Image (cartoon, rainbow, N blue to C red):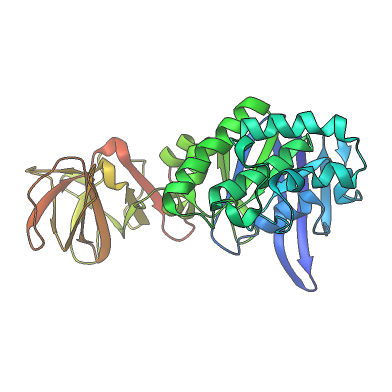
Length: 357
């Protein structure tokens, strides 16, 4: 196992810089997820850690050893790819044993490791099969077995579940997390799926345009996003937003929306009249029902999912979603009143995007 330290890491292709001065410390045995939209630099950052991309600047240490100049095979890392990368003409056993054989290990030495990994990953009955005879989830487990047998100090997962269907993704999320809990290796996991990040990570690193937006435990980021990007990226359905100007009135400060609607800012961070701010509220924190200070919304779409119902409409010209666990008989075209509890509101500076605290 090994701690990982990235200090001022950046990547440049010619005159174009795609990763900008990343500073990140990952503790020994920690499961860290790099998450962000496609093209944000997360896979490039992981490939620099693996040694598959040259580091343009900064310093990388793995287990206290400077790794910038080390070849991939010298870094004692194992990487699991999105595409499985299995040899189609080799059996499951031979795919898992490929690395030890290349390193010229004795069969008597690596065979017990393969059997243990196969048992751990529920592959014991499939060792004689070729990859084409396996399901997608089984193939991904073979790729994980190949990584486990190497006994690395650091596991790297690059969007390993992207090719699986929704049900298999849920199953494999659980299996990867259980594998980490058994082995206690350091893990860096890359995904664009914020649900994977929330359910698997000890800490999440949210990236955007080659920079880190926020680092923290899943619920810390969910409950106190540092800026509008993090607030909108984490959560499904995503956070609702309403942009407006702070105005003073007889009842105190309020947010005046473009359509003339006012939302009282009682109990919110101190802001000055005239400030341009964005109010955010997560769908599950909105209450529906009669209230004197409620906000009217006309329902445009109703989406029942079984456990929850999503109600869609517009407030201040922006699309809003309300999530309720009650099976209320609400139809499109019906007008409802919304209450936004003060303790669940988030205020952001509209221009900079930063959270107002």
